[in-house]
Image (cartoon, rainbow, N blue to C red; front, side, top):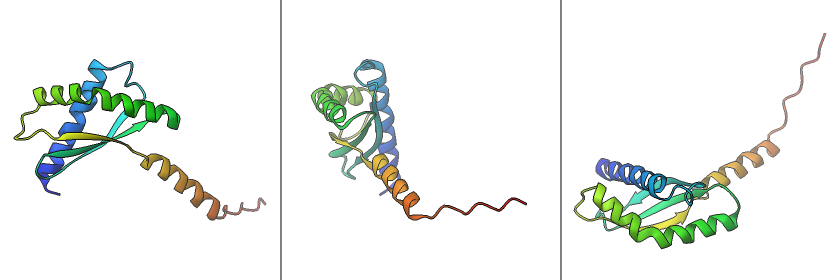
Length: 119
């Protein structure tokens, strides 16, 4: 991935987060934009979203994001000047849950350190 693509990813992530915070504060409270991946040709992009709460809440917030996606894209277009503005696909980011589960599994496998005998 080129340096320019990385900068565009970070810029779009910041702008979408700011838009959610400014215009959709109540609905977007449990939503965090964790990553944006834009294609090198700037035609398509994936927005990874983490939601604090149950899986049902995550699915509900994902449906909500997809409903307001055209308005978010329009606002991003006003704030950022690019040759092409990507069409965003919103995806649930489950990396935090996987990381937590992996740490739990490692804790189960790793034996506890023996306590030092007291003199």
